[in-house]
Each structure stands twice: as structure tokens, then as C-alpha cells.
Image (tube, rainbow, N blue to C red):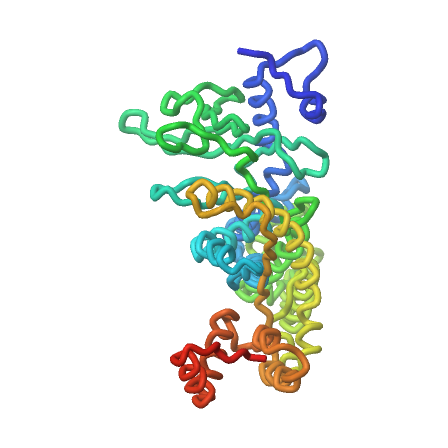
Length: 491
């Protein structure tokens, strides 16, 4: 096997190879993969997905008390509610729906090209893109992989961030040298089913599949030695660009879970503790005992926590006794702290409160915009990353269109517009549209109207309506045309 040598411009690759200790290419990938598999960065990605699915740390909680030796010991008979109030997932969905919940608009002077783009990047793609958005919130980054489906059409597949180990050729993480996808596969070894970890190594020359086990890579007996990305007329072909498109939440690829995990855990813990206190009679009533029969303070603490009762005895003519001290659970305190935690989570995740008191009645547009301020600023940063991703994505679309004889659109300028799903005051928006008639074009007014979902279709309907409203003009034009005259211009 050849030694792993990269071009001089791939400096980051060469820095990883120690002088005097050459590695084969396969050994290099195996070493990097083994290190990344258990890394803190990948664990954080997995934690983001785990929290989104509702698998929070509170579910592993055990109730404990101080034991005889002063150490915490589990106390299984205490109330142990483990409540998951998944505010994190709620805000991830809010952010994904806000930016990616509505169809994308492709604005281009060449309407034919825009229609072809819209057809290729239709509803199926929008579902993939929205899921990619959710994944990049959870992991900081997700990946789109262009491929040809069984019908020979261009499609895109989503790879989650925790499956892809990228090897960037620059410090800004804009270009890839190669990448490895690590993923589990269920296989049968005789009658038994087991999980095998496979690793796909992506390069410009194609894909190679290996089995990853015990920190080493070995050839996959079920896969070809090297697979091409595209097959045309039985011939293997590869893309001229690297066929993995990064979809980043932000330039630093920081996942949302890093900003919200502590607050989410506190919300879960607070609600669990409140229900525990309500369920525990001894939590509401503490026994006050005179002449305690015991000397070990640790035993006293454990018995009190476990049984809420301890033994007493007579001492110097004084009998033991039991009094009760009522401790009330202050629900208002819990409620206040819970509201503060939820508000802090909204601010840290840069989301919005859908139950905001300012939305009562008929709020004006300025009030609504102030509520959306944080999520809108965060969406601006993510849209910058998405625009860069679409620049790469449209290259694959243009290459596909050229390959099937639909034309060369490599020089066409096209704008990708993300239609954000923002609450508006419809009455105020419509009133502003009416006041703008005669000042700006009908097309701009139609684009801003809250009831216009498809601008092109709406403009076509307006044109048809105007023709129907002016029957004399239509009849006059038809008469002129039948006599061989020129049609009347709009001027």
C-alpha cells in the first residue's frame, strides 16, 4: 500500500504526520477515526440528538442520602420522579420552522431556469433541508450528499454531523480534502443479528468502504474496492467537486445544546423535585424526636431520609417524645424559578416566547418584530452559511441539467430567498399595501401581501383579471388583429 502523501497545499494533512514515522493512508484514517469516535466534540453532537429526542440526563437520576461513612448512598424507596420538560426540542423546532418551514423562492431573470431549479429542489428536497437544519442545530453541522436516485434523477441525502469526520484543506473549513462516514449496519452472523461499524472514505476519486473494528480498518467483503459517485452508460464517473455539502449552524460549528443544556437540566430537576416533595408525606412533615437512640450522625441522617423516623429512649428521668414540624411546599417559589429558567433558556437559545403577554389583543408590527429580534438575528447568521451551501449545491444542479441536455446555466445569476415564517399583523400589512398603490409597482405590493403565497401565480391572476375587467379593450385588440393590424401596445 502506498505511503500517505498529500500535495504541498494540503498543509493541515501533512502536519498530522509525524516526521520519521510514515503511515499508510489506511492507517492514517484509522488513527484519526478512532480518536474522533470517542472525542468530546462527537459526544456533544450525540448529546444534542439525544436531548432533542427527549433522552435527558434526569432519566438517570438516583435519589441519595448521606450514609454512615459520610458518603452519598442510593435510597431506592424515596420518591424519584424524573420529569423531562423538553423545552430544548421545542426551541430547535421553532428555529428550524422559522427559517426553513416555508418554501424557498428562487429569483432569476431567466424564469425557465428558475422553474427547473424549483422542480429539482421541490418538496422532497425541502423536507431533507429542514431535517438538515434540525440536525445542524443539534450537532453544529450536517451534510448533504448529492446522488442519482433509482430514476436517474438528482437527489440529496442527509448525513448527520456525528457520522462525518471531515478533513478540511483550510483553517476556515470551506474546502474538503476528504471525509470519512462512520455508521452502524445490522448484519446477520448465522441466526444472530449484530451491529457492524462501517466507514466510507470519500475522496475526489470515489468512495471506498471498510469495516471499522478495534481501531483498525479492514476491507468490506460486501463492497467493491472503489465505487464511483455516478454511472453513465455503464461507465463510472466522478464529480469535479467534492460531493459533500456542509450545512452549518454558525461559522464555528457550535451546536445549540452547548448553550442550553445546563438550563434544560435545571428545568427538569426543578419540576422533578417539586413533584417529589408533593408525593412525600415526610417531605411535608418532619418528626422532631427527643432523646434520640443512637450516636452516629451519618446513621441519623440516613434513617431520617429513608424512614422519616428514628428511635428514642428515656434519659435522666426524661421520656423520649415525638413532635412534628410542618414544612410547606411553596408552589409559588417553584413557579417563579421555573419561569426564570424558561426565560433564560429562550434568551440563550435565541428563540422566542410564543406565549408572550405582549401578543395579547391586536399587537402592532413593531411589537411583533421586537419579540422576533433574537431568533431573527440568529437566523441571519445561519442564512449566511446556508447561502454558501446553496452556492455549492447549485453547482451540482447545473451540472446535472447540462448532463441531461437541459442547457448550460453555469453563468446564470440566481438569488435564493428564505421566506421566514414570522407572525404578522395582517390588517396592518394589508393597509400598508393599499396605501402603497401608485407609489411602488404592483409586483412589489403583491410580494408583500400576506395572502400571496405564489407571487408568479398571483401576478398571472392579476393580469387575467385586468383583461376580463376591460372587455372593450380586448374586443378592440381582437378586431385589429383580425384585420391584419398591429396589436395595441400598453403604452
